[in-house]
Length: 544
Image 1 (spheres, one colour):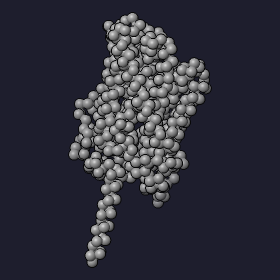
Image 2 (spheres, helix red, strand yellow; image 1 turned 180 degrees about the vertical axis):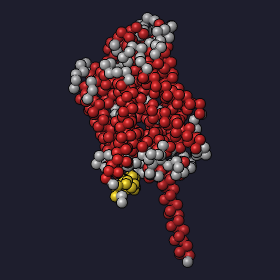
Image 3 (tube, helix red, strand yellow; image 1 turned 45 degrees about the horizontal axis):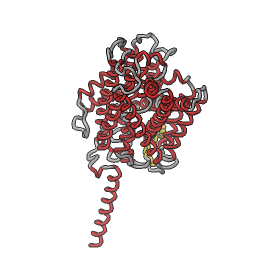
Image 4 (cartoon, helix red, strand yellow; image 1 turned 135 degrees about the vertical axis):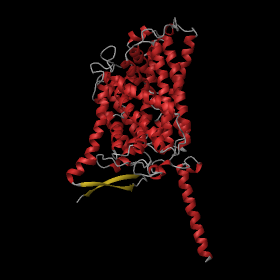
């Protein structure tokens, strides 16, 4: 009898140890996730449980430093070097341009804390996919498929690959031909795909290094701007742009909406950790620290860099030069030779952004495949961590394909500004529905666990801005043609809406039309892959 009692006690201790080890891997032993809101079946996003969704891959390997750099590396791309000129051209004055950069920070700040509330309620990889699924449950999978259409078809990294290629050619003293620029851009996206897919630890190290490099470059720009403003350089009048700073400001709402999209594109990345939460140690605590820290670092550098830019070149010079304000800054302060060095800086910043955004996009694609959405060759392969068992190379390939198409197909001089616009519009639609979901959950589930809770006026402000940015682009711009001639100024809005409508059609075909025509119903089941990843798989069951 005593032997039986001792055996039962030993068995119970072993089970407790296994349970503690499992919780340690998930971060729960640190009181990081004390009570999961998705224990409530009404709030559970998708078919997989929290533990099943977090299984597989490299485990939780990203700490506060890596997550902060993940945000910084995504935000600081080429936007701060290339877009200040086009923003100034759109709104017509230095003062209005600087105010838009402040507005961009305020909107990003509001968005960050909305996403913090959702991210700490649902600490899973996938970002908006998870939050939409938790609220918009009917029709089932409609929100997932619409988000998937946007994430896959418009989630490419082509623009920064093109920027890297063009700047490397400038630095090498070569002219950009039709195919040498595209060839280099293709080499970049293939390199990044293999880097993350085959050597994931090296990919994270390279990603962190380039993020630190970008901070150093912007600090150099800011310090140089202070020297220019002190009057100790060859710039004759560094305060010229700050006198009558608002003279010539545009009165067209379309100009401000389009310029705001560009500013928000430059700030894009504050939600980057939300997409990779399954890789994050102590995800709730880490997200609450890394999010504000990463955005704060970038905002300070952005605002001071703009002041530095406008101190070194007049508005007339910027309008007539045909080059970026960053190039004018380096040229006017250091001479023409420095412009070539700037090309190297921009190229490295661009490839750093590609590495960072690709890392997150692959995890989102993997989460979509894990949810069971129909993909060519079945979703199990695309949900796996093949071939290493540590990193989602199939998810990277999903990201690779549209990137290659965009790099090859359109003319680069038209493609880059159009891509900036067309990526921004569908995101505003998603943002609109995310904020509506926030208020719905506050009303429907007031007692749900919210480790971070956004102040509701910030959410209202973000919702109002998203609404404005959905309507204003259809207003005719002051110049009548927009910034992507010969394309119509409203085309990017229609393309964005069309992409989301493709998602609706895809969902209808998968869930309604094909089952009705061929007489079957979709029955979900869960499978565990060899690498430990759990995936939802649908089988067709014949109806009577």
